[in-house]
Amino acid sequence: MMRYRIGDINRVTVTGIQPFGVFVINTDRVSGLIHISECSTDFIDDINREFKIGDSFDAVLMTVKEGKINYSIRALMERTGSLSKIPVPVNIRVERKRHWTNYKDEIGFAAIANKLPDWKQRKEYLQ
Image 1 (cartoon, helix red, strand yellow):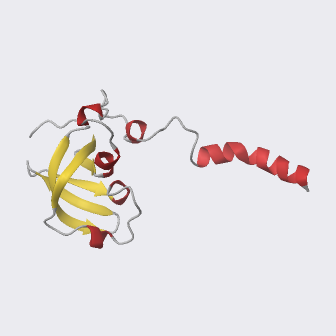
Image 2 (tube, rainbow, N blue to C red; image 1 turned 120 degrees about the vertical axis):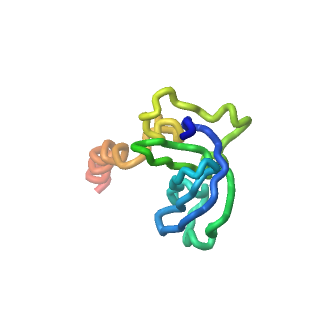
């Protein structure tokens, strides 16, 4: 079996389509998954309209965990500059989100929970 590294770009072919993502197989006949959130930078209403079995395209290898490979098309769409600038983590166990999103920004539910007391206090003050 070939050794895979996060950040590698592989040619993949669609072998199956589910509402949550697309099953693919690479040129080495190793299967993987592209989650629907990694299929496009835009919202995908119906994944069956976007992909057909047998479609081939390039995808970035995102994670290799417990023998399962996850790919991303979105990472190729979002990249700027050359492909050599795609970050490749040293430790393969590091989660994808740490390297493929801007995790330093205070976004998400934790940030909302932290701001909630201030919002409640402002609402009481304004009433």
